[in-house]
Length: 298
Image 1 (tube, rainbow, N blue to C red):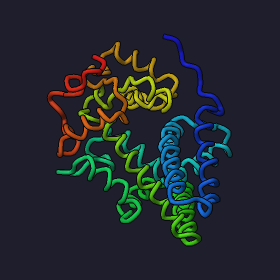
Image 2: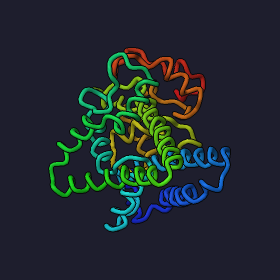
Image 3: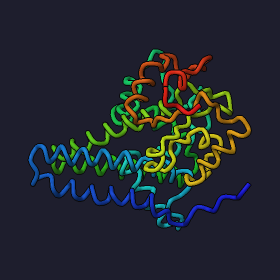
Image 4: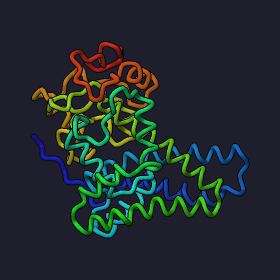
């Protein structure tokens, strides 16, 4: 087996995607007063797309830094969190709780009994903004070191403070930005459902789904290889396809949890929305991914 090359000190493709957000934000703030209604809608739509793309970068950065020099890492962490509307250190803690429990009991992001797809995504997107007490308490308890708590407080100040400042400065502009964040976060939480559709948190070979969609993995840095990511979360994104093939060889990738559709393919969205159990993280006895999806990889 060939040992993978170490991740670069600066991951230029992912940094380029993050740079799009740095181009969008000042353009959005400056152009608002000069645009008509449809121009503003267009800028919000672009902002949503850039935010959604930046989430793939944020996710990878939490596992393998896209900017390894210490100062660069610190700055990119803050700005990626701001791009997605997540206080970075808080979301980092929340995400690694997810990796510890794999969408099973103990996972803070687990669905609640009787909760469907739309309700789950709405609750997950709205609660941290309007009723954040449980989420803040969870991450605060986990961040036991003083520097982690200082960083957590700073990240909340950066994200919430920046948004509040813009709302006070120009209410319509600030609320539009808030809307972009809410819609984007709704979609981000959808990705979690799709990536754990009919998985089993108690089985190492069934922790995540695998999407082999070439277009999706090309643009979203191999985010579709979610089973390999959960088994080996520190593997750089470039090596996830090869890691997936290795795991297939030792029966740690189940064929019924592999699909050729991407999580954002309308057919896949409809499929998951129809079939996801109302019970949280049910262990499924008969997966329907491949049988219900003609183009799935078997």
